[in-house]
Length: 184
Image (cartoon, rainbow, N blue to C red; front, side):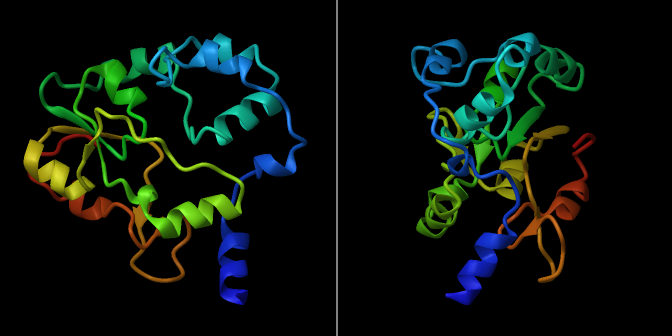
């Protein structure tokens, strides 16, 4: 039990359930489409929301990044049509907005991860129905992209003491060694 307590204590980030409960359901209509998918909205829309309400809403729905119109506009300059994929796509909001293939390992569907996230009072990702279940290297080998987009991807841990890494993370060194990849 001590090891589990240490693991839970080592996971950084605010715990939305230590925040007094608040009804943030009204934000669903503003930030999710009719299918329940995260919308891409102007950054001003997020800035207009009380920060703790936004944190609570995103955390209790498994959103780690809130894509904005401005971000999508900036990313479009890096996208090579037909030669760009997203890895670790999660709910697929970024890739969908950019019109690129979205892939993810679906690691958070595992019971171990459901429990870890649950212990910290956080939801896991709700994977988009249009996000293909492929690990990063599998996706890179299949698509052979010149550009890979990755947001909120944790790198693989090669030792037990590496900060900000994960035993099932992405081997970024291996990705960067791919001869066809130009931008990551």
